[in-house]
Length: 559
Image (cartoon, rainbow, N blue to C red):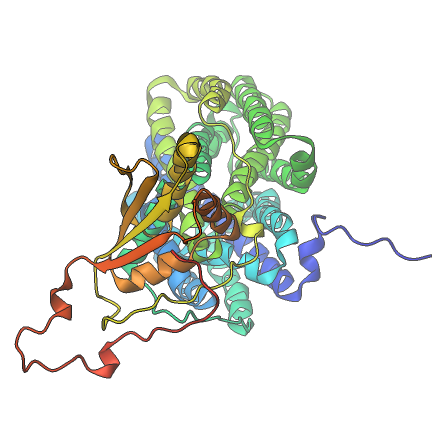
C-alpha cells in the first residue's frame, strides 16, 4: 500500500526543506529572546514610572524603527545578498541588547535610556525583516510559500506563548537584567545558521540600482499596484486599532487584573497560544473563505475579544478572550502578509514586504501612542472599549477597499528580452529616454483599446516609466501613440525586463488591437542628446569602457 502524497500546502511542508528548517528553528529561539526582553522592558518601565504613556511607548520604541526605515531596508534587501543583510541587522540588534544588559547590570537604566535601546534593537530587527521574509521564497518552492509565511508567524507566536511566561518568571526571580542578557544570547544561533547558509546569489547582468533610486522604484511599484496598495491600507488600519491589546497588556495585568509580572507573562502567553492556533489554521481559512470574508470575520471576532478583555476582572476569562484575540489577530496579519508576498514579483519583493512591515508596525506604533494617551485620560477599560468599537466598524472599509486576488509570485520568471538595436553610443547614465509606440486600431475598438491601455499605464509605471500618456491623432482617428519616459538607458533596460508573464500578456493584448500587416512602430529617443554630439570636430569618441554593451539575451518584444 503506497503512502499518500504529502500536500504541498500542508503547514509542515516547508519544514521538509533543510535550509528553511534550520533557519526557522533558530528564529524560534531568537523570537523567544525578543519576547523575554519585551517582558523585561515593559515591566521595568512600570517599576520606574506610573505613566501609562511611558509604558505604551516601550511598544512604540520597538515598532517605530520598522515604520521609519523599512523602505531603505527593503531596498537594501533587494540590492544586496539577503543573507549578509540579515546577519548585519542581527549584529545591530545584538549590540543594542548587550549594551542594555550592561547598563541594567550597573543600575544606569532610566526610562529614556530604556526607550533608546529598545529603539536600537527595533532598528536591527527592522533592517532584518525584509531580507529575512523575502528570502523565504529562496528556501522553499513557490507552492509551499503560504505555509512558510504562516510558519514564520507560528515561530513568533510559539515564542509568544512561552516567552512571556518564562520572561515573567525570570523578571520576578532575577530581574530585568537577566531578561536582557538572555535575549542577547539567543541571537547567536540565528547568526550561526545564517552564516552557514550557502545561498545561491544570481547576479543581474545590469548594475544594481543606487539606494535612493531603488527606494523610489519600490514606492513607484507600490503606488501603481492597486492590489498591494489596498492590502497595505487595510493592514495599517488593523494595526492602528488592534494594537491596543499589545500596547496596554502590562496595564491590563496591573490595573484590570491586579496582578504582577507573572500575570502579565501569562496573559501574553494566552495571546501567543491563540496566535499559534490561528496560524495553524491559515490554510483551512484560505481554502474556505475569500480574502475579504476572512478579514471581515477576523476583525469582527477581534472586536468582541477586545471588549471582553475590557469588561473582565477575572484572569481566566481574560485569558480565554486573549486566546481568541491572538488567533484572529494572527490570521488577519498572515492574510495581509501572504497577500503582499504573492502579489509582488521577485525584483521588488523586499521593498513590498518592507512596506507591509511599515504598515503593520507603523499602525501599532502610532496606535500604541494614541491608546496610551487615551488611557491616561479615561482609563484602560474605556480605551479598550473604544478600540473594540472601531474594530467592529473596520470591515466597512471592504466596501471601497475590497481584498484583492493575489498571484504574481506564483508566476515563473518571464523570458528575458533582447536589447533593442542601438546605433548611438550610450552609457548607462544616458537619458532621459523617450519611448513612443504607434498602434493602428479600428475605430469600433477604440473604447476597449483605451481601457486596456489604462492597465498598461499602471504596468509601465510600476516597472520604472514616468510621464506616461496615450494620444489619438485627430486627422487619422485609427492612429494612437503611447508615450513614456525612463530616467536613463539603464533604467529603460530594467523597466523592459521587469514585467511578469501576466503583464507581458497584458502588453500583448494591447498589441493585438493593432491593424494591418506592418507591426507596431516603436521609437526610442534620447531626450537631451547633447552628450551624443561632438562639441568640436576634434572631440574624441567615447572610450569603449564608457559605452554600455548591448547584449541580445533572447527573442524580444518590440517595446
